[in-house]
Length: 300
Image (cartoon, rainbow, N blue to C red; front, side):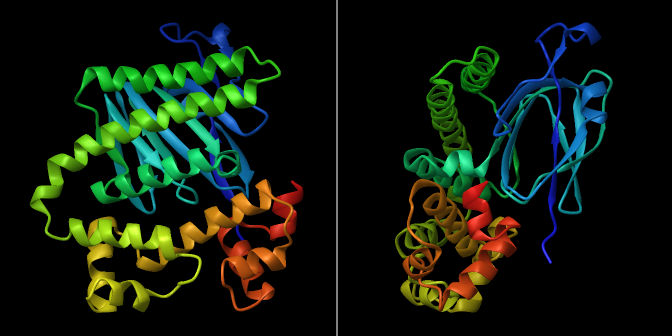
């Protein structure tokens, strides 16, 4: 039985003016939400139940807040950027009185429709996982301002929609991901030299990108890396707090979503492309990952 995920959509407050009469909702067709939030709005968010996975980005501008992330409490502070991946949406537990942040939430199907964005997102995803925490501190003010500027651009396109708003938001999101990867790359550079297992992790992700359709088993990747499956599992778990199967399933899920949305090929053909034993096995896998059957996802 699938469990629908909850995510928080907050209402927008215009920057530097957090008054009640300035509230306005900044979402675009239920796919993209980008807004400023303060303590009052953050703690009074409305729950939107959804079976569609979302990516969530948050930059704290003032104060701090506490979230429950997979049973662990994490404190988000000023100039920290937080990156939550699908099926890992945090639950806000509390915030300081002066809390202000920019939050961007994007549904996965909006991303998987564009192959360039999808590849950039995967790179950013693997980089953020390596750092070992969903939260990083952006030390460089210029990098921080670039990311905020990208988010404000998305807000502006939501605020002033036109016939090419879809393309405009995708372009702004591409810029956001590029700047995000620059920040993540800088942070990885600060830690990779102290971690002997970094090379194995990167080699695994490269192998995964090229082989995930045909190989769903840990033993294949371990054999290619000339290590035991147990050792590979230990390294990935230590670095990312996730399993090898988690990464394999994430790749298969994103590819399946993209094929369902960007093509008219049948579910059986997608099952064959991704090398599932049969269509029934693929459908069970997809429903477990996304929360609904492949045809229901395509028709939404």
